[in-house]
Amino acid sequence: MKKLTLLGYAALLGLLAYQWVDADSLQLRLQKNSEALQSAQRETQEARAQLAASQQHLDAAQSALQEAQAQLVQARTATPSAPPPGASTPQTPKDASGNASFTDNLIRLADKASKLDQAFKNFPALEIPELALLNEADWIKAVSDHPQLETPDQIRRALESLVNSAKNHAINVFRDAVTRTGLGSESKPLESLDPLLAELRKKLNGDILQRYELLPPARLEPGWLEQPEVKNTIAKVKQAPFLVVREKTPAGDRQQVTIFFAMPENREIGKSYRSSTSFFLSQKSTP
Image (cartoon, rainbow, N blue to C red; front, side, top):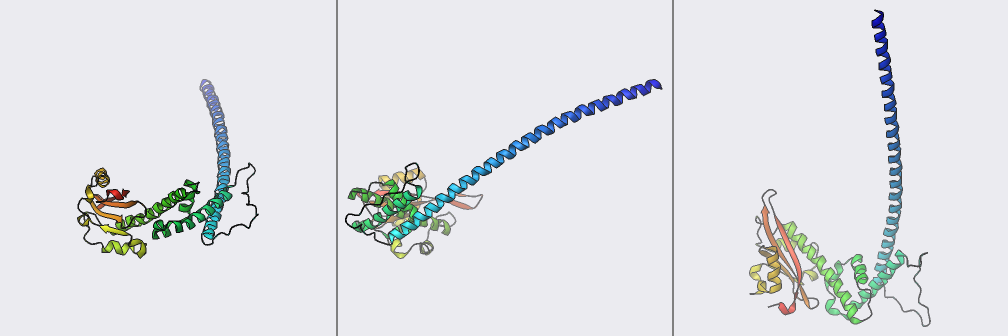
């Protein structure tokens, strides 16, 4: 009986020792987890501080862009007056590093865009109604891509880039209208242009629509589809065209053409994929 008591006592001591070691191990794990949690909290605070700083920079840039856009709108509606004789040209303010500030650069670009807008009167063939579709970003991009606007050739190239952007805006409206009407799909072949024209009139005025012709392949001139530029474009898509949209009177020496293709129908979703491709066709290639 006494022997059993001693054994039980030893077992109890062993159990207590095991629990003490286990508790010590648990304490160590808890300490490590607490340190990891504190480290994660510090990283989270640093990330939040960086995010707040980035947001401040973004807000400042957005405010500067809005100011420049307003300056551009104002400049486009007013003809700048020449400074009086002997007056000094105002210098562009600079930041602490000696560089022109972001806002001042945008305002400078807006002023150049205004002068470029006025230059269209010297190139009447480029003054198309699609220019009304341009936004401030298009104008800023044009003067950024063409920093030198001193010679007539430099100005013309910048104006042509704006014309191309404007025509691309119009073509995007055509693409959206084809998608919305579903024309060219296997389940809805092109039988009449009336639904498409009705959709286009919601976004484009008559002056713009009159500059384009919408032609199914059967109404194209004989040999038009066989021109190298056209034939190569169709060969890349490997589908038959169902509609051609092209300028009636090109602005410049190249005609913008957009060909719409009906892609095979996807049976799972019950819709046809429609594709389109735009390119400029040299007037010398027109049959």
